[in-house]
Length: 180
Image (tube, rainbow, N blue to C red; front, side, top):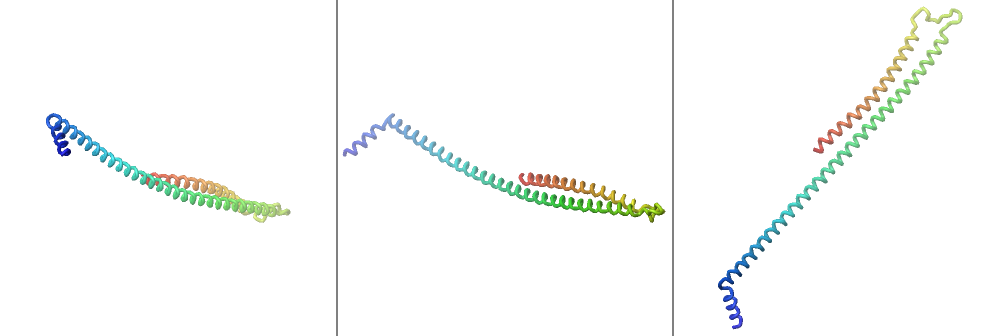
């Protein structure tokens, strides 16, 4: 009976304006609790979406960095190959120049020996005194060939340098296009 009287006292207390006030307080508490729960659920979803987007951006950034690094390694390898080819060309040009200088020196020596023995002491003229000076013409050809060889060596070195520059610029342009 004590439990029943207490229930009656609660019902009597909630009748009238006190009942409306209690219902309003309970309703307000339910609305606030719903708003807090909805806000918490929305913000946790937003945070999860933000974290997922951030992770995706980091994965893409890492992939881009790996791509740039591999392109850089490929370009470096290509450049090293071009440098080695240019060095080999320069070595070949230097060897050809050395051989040309040696041949020119040998020809000068032969020309000097021939000119020393062409003059006959009794007549004062060589065996080809009446004919054209073919040794002089040959010497002139050798001198022109030496000059041309030097100029061609310089042109070859310049061409190798220009080729290095062009290849480097082309590689740079390809790398920029691939990065986009």
